[in-house]
Amino acid sequence: MTALLRPAFFILCALALCGPAATQAQPTPAIEMVDIPAGSFLMGACVPASADKQRRARDEFMGRPPAQPACQPEEEAFGSASGPQHAVRVRAFQLGKTAVTLGQFKAWLRAAGRDDLLTEEFMQANRHGDQAPVVYVSWHDAQDYIRWLNQTWPQGGRWRLPSEAEWEYACRAGQPVRYCGSDDPGAVAWHADNSGRRIHPVAQKQPNAWGLKSLFAPRPQARKRGLGRPAALQILAGP
Image 1: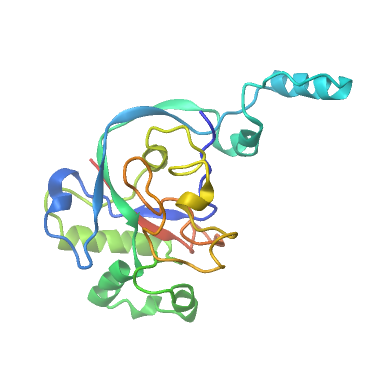
Image 2: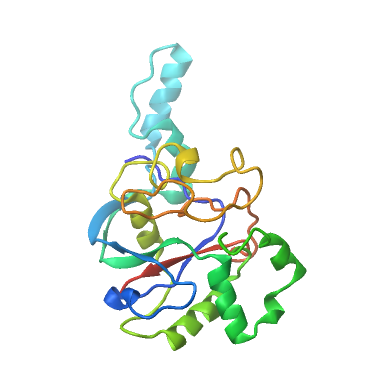
């Protein structure tokens, strides 16, 4: 299994709704959910054994053809932070088809009267229209947003954040790819080399095998502050 490259920013897969409740009354603009089947997968990146590294160093020193390592070279940059790989079983859940848009987040800002969040920094970061993923959202503000959803649309389940395992499982969608749906980052994501250094509307790139979009890199560059101020909200649903 190749290493799954995670976004360089904090993706807030927010809005988790259990089971069939996702098809009932929803906020406006509506939040489209995708059913994610139960299953197992290898979570994390492959971590090369020290013996593999030593053998490769000796081969390189002696000018011998390198032996095939246990891990692919491109995985090693991620292994120390993401490995070792381990089997994980995930129950069925629902995940938002795209990142939460600015328009969806504004519905809460209006209802809750949260003008205090409309700082110059927030408005500057979110100047790309209501169909763009909302960014520059703190973990605490995301929890307030989710709390509002649970209080306003509680039918049949609850909105919540996904676990890291749920996010990675949904992102992989049963495929051994480095990005969420492809080995080509440009096919599934906007990034520094193809975005023109700006945030684009959600759902413009190809989906992964389960129909999810915008799971990877909704903004070309992002700074981390605390738990990820420049977050893109995305929604998950599950028990």
